[in-house]
Length: 168
Image (tube, rainbow, N blue to C red; front, side, top):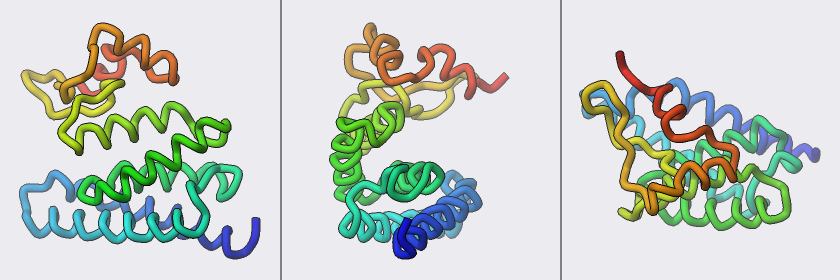
């Protein structure tokens, strides 16, 4: 790994650490917290866009597993910058096609992008909220085949997945 790529890897992991620290602000009742979250994710998406300009999708082979995972999370959270999210999706699709990125991660990013576009998700990975203690997903395309599609990319069946989020 060259020193430039090592610096990018370190930057990606630093950004995702800040993301994890700030994540509770995303759903805060305080508008100042929500605004701080939006500003942070916008800065991170802008930087990810610059990284994609320079290197394409930051694969594990390029930046290491931790930094590649960080890039994926930053793309996931680029909800208000659909251009960045769509571009990350395209680049990640190319990386998956040559075995350089995770089909599971791609499925999550695809669903997130579709939901942000106001379209039905494919894999049922995006949860809209909780009703009566049970997670409620955003609408899903062909829900009868959802678990089949999930299995193809290494995601737990929907019932097992949402059980992780259930509130007793």
